[in-house]
Length: 243
Length: 184
Image (cartoon, rainbow over all chains, first blue to last red):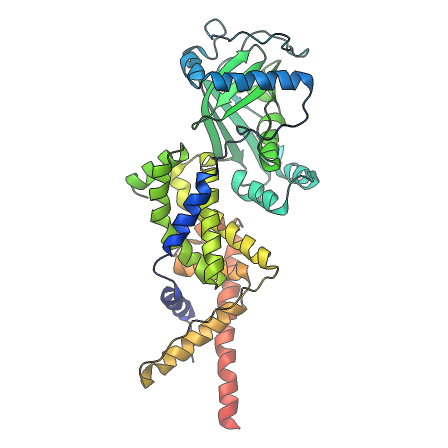
């Protein structure tokens, strides 16, 4: 009789016997070939195919692209003064660059730690299910890998801005989860550009609120999944200064 | 996780391909073993691991805490395995029975047990196979197993209990026909 109290050991020993000792070499080779063509995902940082944009968004997006082309060194050089409107070198705005009518202050976002109010995970998942551009696999990936919210209740996004660097974190039911970060600079009084390691750039139109700001992306995302992630992480809720 | 491994994760997260290649080489055998055990199919296990490595490279910048890399990549692997099952359009993996050739007569009992275990395992759903492999092969804790699959710890515990019971029942059931044959 095999089914005794030691069945776990029996299964464990059997699994060890069954498991292959080595993976075929072609796995690494084939994966490497695909990876050569794969950019690292940095939420909101990648560019997607040309799409329909409003004139104002197109102008700002073009300006951000120009900033990227002019060189990654721009942000690096300016980072010492980022967050300080008196010292931040601001490239000249392109002719006709629109100013958001709701932008109330010409200065940059002050350095500090900002956070959203708790968002309900059920609302995020409902929005995800309503987004017909997302596939089932993308939804699962967002829930389990990008946000890690399955079977949780609340989701909070925080954004720390200081000394030219930014760090975004997400907390799920109070526990800090994954995030992203890099350097940032203000392209103009209403546009912040986040740069991540590897060179990805994301531009956001900034609208100041009484004690914080809201962001609206001006750079297209690489995929529906990236677009949704960017919307939840940066655009859904206002950021409020917490310290 | 040792310091060199941690450094590689951080370098790869910042876009260093060479560091990522070293990282991939360090984990590929483990990933393949798990995929092969759960999927019971060589080709699909290879596909799942390749997909895991590609997703790992693509999404690594989103991993805030490098020390969580192992748990995180297990999660990616479980997703890739689930996708493989979905692709096949069914919840039972294709079966590739491993052939064991008994060398001597007194090993026949072990061979029979292995075959019973194989049959029992292949009757399990992918979810139950996964929890058994993570817990009893990789030796992950229940917390780690739950995190890898993306389920609450209580669910992982009940799945493990069910899966082991199912294996136990399979072992016993496989023995009953023999008993009937003897008594007939």
